[in-house]
Length: 312
Image (cartoon, rainbow, N blue to C red; front, side):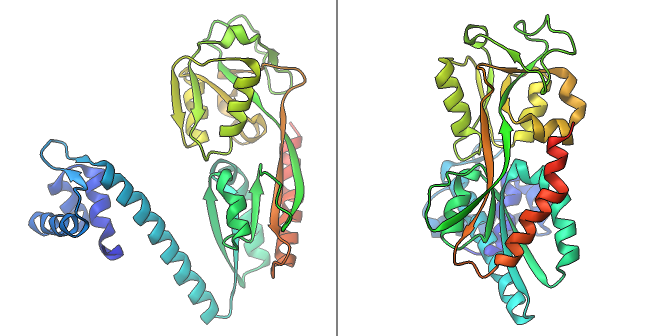
């Protein structure tokens, strides 16, 4: 197993064709075939089913690619930290959920880097369910997200209360009669659970920050979804909801401030009153050596970002 040749496996997984994968990686097809044969022999499993066209990834292949990507990321992080030590730079690991990061980081990171050119910042964008453990283990210095806040060795600070609404395509019968002024993030429309029972839903995979929240709200309302499309990327799910694929639990403050164009295609609803709300927090270890940087990142968030979420 060689990280420097992982691109060969990734190219074949993407192209599903040996000739195109070889061209993409700038080697000959026989050389690529020989490498895949040697790798599968070394591992003792088939990574690809090459008896069909297009080539299919096996379960073992999917697992190999997932784990090797993580190893590659860990190696890149290690090299970055070693380089920083050689240059006597400070390395600051900042964790944030992938969806939240896509909306928040463009406002925070440029200003943070401008103020601290001597700091090598490493971003950890992943499911919020994993961030707290990474802070506890020292892999992340500061994490933002909706976290458990139950670990005594960590410090927590509230960032914002975030309403959770049910976005419903306006083509769905249960909201088709609403005017444009009804079913907005500021004035959500109350739906009866019976109106959404059996309807198609976009639901997150476990590990996504919204997984527990979606399961809780469905359970409290006694709603059993119809067709379910699981997603990893909330931005993608939001666009699919706007196209009428299914209903979606969402924090509108993220999207109606940063992606407002699709809002008119959805009605924002709630299954309960008062509207369910969750709290985003910052988390860090009590024994952190980066307390000043953590304080500044939190203060930057309050200065540059939270007002944008609060003000229409």
